[in-house]
Length: 500
Ligand code: KIV
Ligand code: ZN
Image (cartoon, rainbow, N blue to C red; front, side):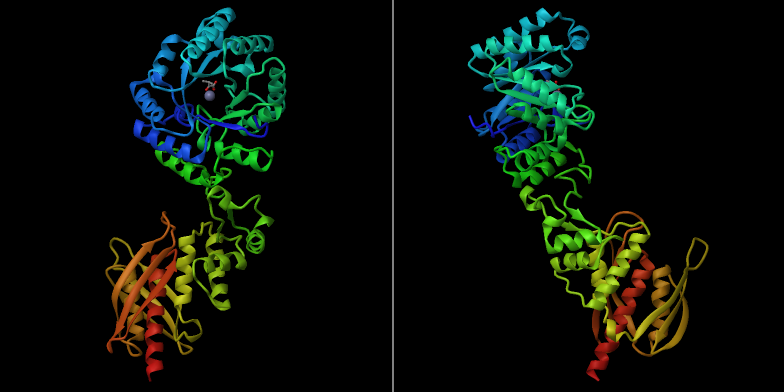
């Protein structure tokens, strides 16, 4: 036995499925079990078969799927429950009974002696069937210490292969957990396990403390799913064990993110963005100081490389973003703006950030396409002003002021909508320079919400058959359309100039 190897007992398919609102079909359970097996967990607690026929079907299929992991079923300390579990072909049964005064009295209506007797009988019954037995004195952390020791000793003598200590209502602190496991290790020799709930947000810390106290197995769930506030999250426990506690597990950490995504999709439980390891923001950097740092040396603002858990670093363009971060993000996506273009992109990103908007990758790329698409140093036409009026009993009208060769030109037009009116007003002013018609117009709202950045992609053609495409990206659709149109006309004019 390697003292530094910690067994990962995954209960996503049992305690995790007890997350309020989560219910998995046998097929979904199988998909998760296959992924957990690939991930490298030691034990998959695949369900509580006495709960339903669907559970039994799922358990039987998973037990016979030829997995490398041990497949376990949960059973109350009752022969009838154990028989149902045995019928599911599992070779590992986790049996439990309440041991705290409050649960023995109000949940079981049993005396402590009856509880010990039921625990011993169930363990012996499981062992008589040649099956691995893990025993849990439920609510162990609120159980009288002398009684807990008595139950654990009785379980060991009855043949339990593992004893799991559940912090059923999550009331432990790391110090208390470490002490409890140390004390129990003095009275029993079977490997101890911990099962921590997250009611006070301490499930992971308590699990790690249990390991410090001598536990060699930890119960976990992917994404920290589970009853009420959930169980200790697999991804957090495993990464802490590997990187902070110098322990080993069988987990292939590079599959952690993929596993988290599968579980989130199948359970419908969305992961909070700031969740450690698997949350969307866990490897995202926004502030200029941070992005600059990670671009030069990732270790400056990252505890470990995101690739280690199957992820990629994300540099976020927002009001805290710096030139370096935005430049790196753009270069990563194949954009190579000039210094002047970059300055304008950064300014636009900050402008959006100041208005309280989040700038997604898609928004940033649209802004870059719009800025880089316009022939900056060769602008012939520039927008100086724009006003639109629209409504139910009003004819949509736009007035546009353009600067051409340093002179101001103003025109107003009506249209079927404000975009149409504004484009017509631009055409009216520029018709003598380039008689351009709109050949194609496409609008894309890049992020959800009415304040999303809109990207307008157009194709324009002049009388001589010159066709160019152009883009605009603004939070205002009319502005994005006007920007695209002016970019298009500038491109046509430059094309003509070059030909001349
Ligand atoms: O939290 C708990 O006590 C449990 C038991 C069934 C081990 O989930
Ligand atoms: Zn539990």
